[in-house]
Image (tube, rainbow, N blue to C red; front, top):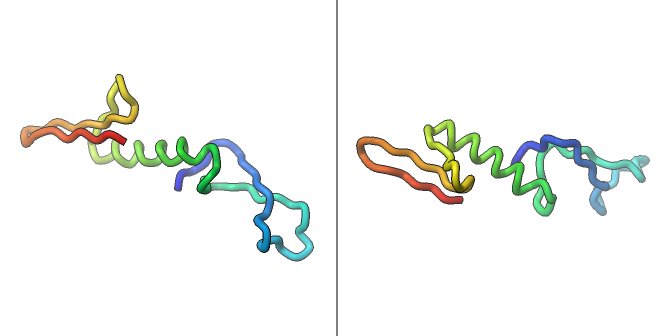
Length: 78
């Protein structure tokens, strides 16, 4: 799950409508499966976590992360 940067609202799911709350919408704080913003929110959270481990993002391909050390190299492609 990724955190949403912009405000996103959705209708209440069928069977979940609270009594007396018909016609109201829900404001999302986290991304949901199927939401257009979900992949971007997930990748933003993932890349933040992976860079905390000392990996760097390639300047040529944003899905490539790498780390070099005396013991070898790690390449991670998402």
